[in-house]
Amino acid sequence: MVSGLLPGALARIDEPWSPRTVAVLNVYDIRVVKTKGEFTRHRHLETDEVFLVLSGSLTIRLDDDEVTLQERPRVGQVGVCRRL
Image (tube, rainbow, N blue to C red; front, side):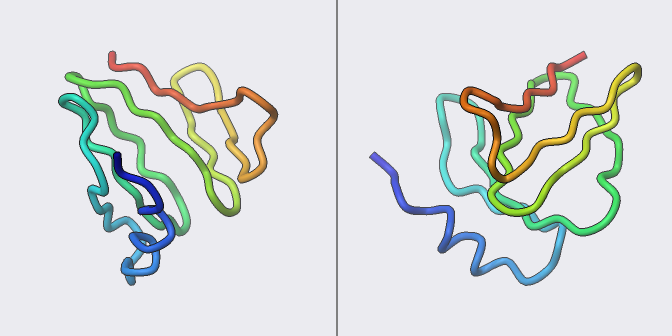
């Protein structure tokens, strides 16, 4: 079991938008990243993405919607961008 990795992994990231893989779940990488400014729209055809905000907020613009994730989400709230 892997635990307690997020704070240490985030502490080692100096530049925004430089993701680090902290674990692998089946065939999926679990990554952490520090962000700053605009989140560049992109898509991954082969996988979904899950976002968990630890500090601040993240707004994700979709084709027909916009989702803002906060560091203190409502119980059960999680952000998932499905592959297209």
